[in-house]
Length: 401
Image (tube, rainbow, N blue to C red):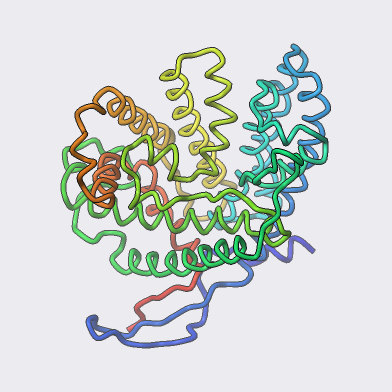
């Protein structure tokens, strides 16, 4: 039964256009393609499989880690069995279903990361305290990558009001359509608004990384990555919202409202992963290290988290045209951003004039500091056709004549 669901490998885009049209300012004919329903069905099946596995791990961790915290057996069990077993779990599943679409592959990295970082939380007592009030609370905590909003008085998950749900649904709808529109634009220009010789899938340490052409192209990819990640993380938590529970927002318009690198990474960009790293990396490290070293550990963990996700996304088992990325580029990218935050901390007294500039201008300058090396993050997605494989789940516009 499940094997038949995954019969469509979602590599070749065979969608039929629902509309053809022309644009006054552009030559040729364009076609509008609808999302492939099977894309979201396959993603939903993988989500349920992972959620069930996460619940089993949660019950086990609650009994043998939370209830035996700070014991040698808890550390041995966590680092010696739970985390390694979770990290190795996606690969046989990918082989069993012969999954080839890289978006589906990447989604299979969700369960291992939830289990690994929340197991560390359990060992070092850094989980949100409401989640440990009961086994049920703890198991439900593991069912979602997004953090629930918890009522501090009742120690239960907060309910999603009609206005909350309306705002969540509207935000998801906007991001869903903007992601398709932005991806259509990026693919139309072959991911280059301006010509450049930068090889996006390599380290490419040349002065051209600071050229206006590369920065413009990198900014376009950053906007595209933002919309696509927003869709992914908001979809992941939307099921909890449908069940009536309020979840924390994953993004807070980071590209246009961040006034510093620390605000960008700490309060705006991908707060879902930020919270995972805060409780599973920063807070445990802070028990033993200084604040700056704990930040370093957190950015290192973020880089390794993404590099691990890359091993899942590019896991090979005989499919044609296999793509082999250069690993640890994402780790290097996040360590570069740690350096930017360290520089900000040491020189923040020099930037008082920025308070007089419009927020969108300051935010653009903040983003520009990361853009020279942002291809270490987004370049593989371009070179491996990740974006085009994600496009099968979106409304998409392509030039056909």
